[in-house]
Length: 193
Image (cartoon, rainbow, N blue to C red; front, top):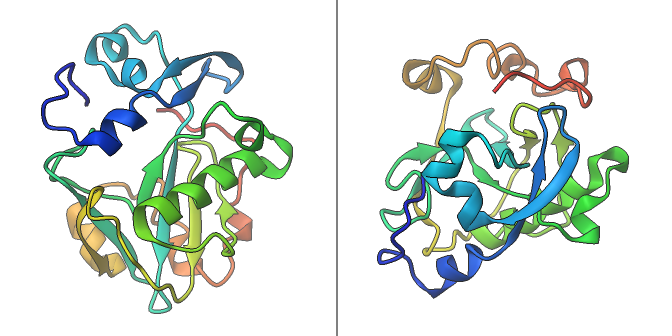
């Protein structure tokens, strides 16, 4: 998690720390706003005071391989670690607060996909559930990752990810069904964090 020192951050990341996140209760009801910096300070995380909305996008290519990215060593969070395809937060703006059809969260995910991976916003995404406000896309994509955000990336097969992770209860039940994930979509279900 983010530590108080900003010495390893560039100007882009320092500016992002001032973005305003949506603070929520455990039922995803908005109860306030706070800067990304304060939401990610370890002391606030340990106190559990600033539970906030976030999303995780998982992208699959046409071979059903999952795109994972390696964070830069100077990233705000999870420096050097391999992660999902893209993750961030919706901001406290009218466009990203819209709840109907989870449009605000989807707009935030599309905004950050373009920022982080250079993926144009014409692509639609499927909202799966509220564990991390996860969304999924399966298609052919041209990637142009922002070198200030992404150290490297690669596609991994289900078997390769299985070897790395023990997330069987969340990711793996629907991976074999990427042609039609609609039976697994649970927009109102909030999974335990």
